[in-house]
Amino acid sequence: MDIKVAVQAAPFSMDYGYSDALVGRSDIGAVVSFTGLVRDFNETPDVTGLTLEHYPGMTERTLTEIGEQACQRWSLQAVRIIHRVGYLGPGDPIVRVLVASAHRREAFEACDFIMDFLKTQAPFWKKEHSTQGEYWVKERHSDQQDAARWE
Amino acid sequence: MHLTHLNTRGEANMVDVGDKQETRREAVASGRIVMLPETLTLLSEGGLPKGDVLATARIAGIQAAKRTHELIPLCHALALSKVSVEFEIDIAESCVHVTSLCRLNGRTGVEMEALTAVSVACLTLYDMCKAVDKGMHIEAIQLDSKQGGQRGDYQRVNRQSPIVTGEGTSGEVSLGERCPSPCVRVKFLAELRERVGESEATVGLDQLASRDISGLKEALAERDDRFKLLTDQRTLCAINQVMANDDALVTDDDEVAFFPPVTGG
View 1: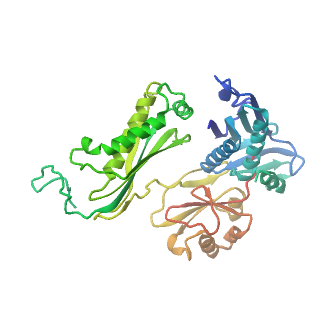
View 2: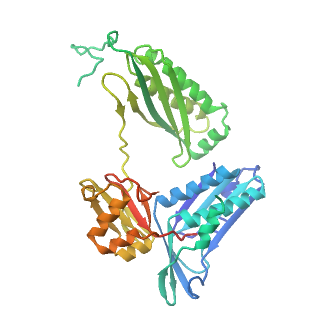
View 3: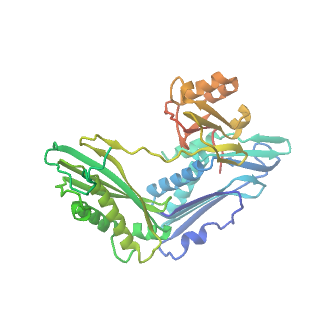
């Protein structure tokens, strides 16, 4: 299983993981990636930024386990997961998941699966800063439902 | 306590086992070989020039166990009833874990056989992979457990220190000190940290009515009303960074973290 995960405060590029996962390989037929960005509206209309906290150690382990579960469900050639922590401004990339597979369907589904489980299992917490003050983001019931689809 | 392979004059000698009772003996040993991630990928995908690495190393380990008496001077030749050698590829640690189990009905223990099997399996892995990676190293070859024999059973105590994190600030948590007397180290993360007003607490094991998570919550709630928040159904818990429920047991030096539902991504 070719899985790499990273949790870092530094920004990452919008094509993170792409060349690393594909270098020297010709058995990959499909690459699907998802990049999540900070919106300037969420629980309040004027979000000025957010601070991401995590639980070092457990975070990396959880992300790796999610990648491994995806590899067990689908035939995947590579999985890359990167997530930022610390302060982020509107428009900044927060998370990126890249999945490489022989065929597109597996890559699409695995990428979707990894994001659903990352959002409901990986120990990250968002605190939003807005013009009205700062508050911790509440979990969403819809995220739980999304993750439950895979059971 | 004395060394059984030395006689009263301090000379090496083989122990006479003729009068010992025949019992069922079993020993498990383990070790690992650490290599570059690229080497591990080649190994797991069968891309190495010498072919099927794990199958070869398994046979080598089994053969070695049977010939332990030829290698270790004072070992008896044993008719082993079972030898197994197993491999586990560990991508996170970039290594192969090797485990061997040896068994027989006899008068002498089989730990040397299990240790020899692990050692030779590791050496064979090195030989099979050295064309692409000369920096590999073999480590932590050890007896994990043994059963049978007059000295009784042995089980290795896991001495790996638990994960202890210290002062939690927004964004990250750092490594901290271990506690002096038996205790559980508790962390409060994210919104929960702000609501209880503390990032960590230490609770002595003797303060727990039951040595599990619900006992820990009770002990904290007795200490201060703020900790009643922990019994909120939304509050999640992890022991040594693995998710746990109220029934999960806690032991000395465990790190227990309480936190709200996650909101990453």
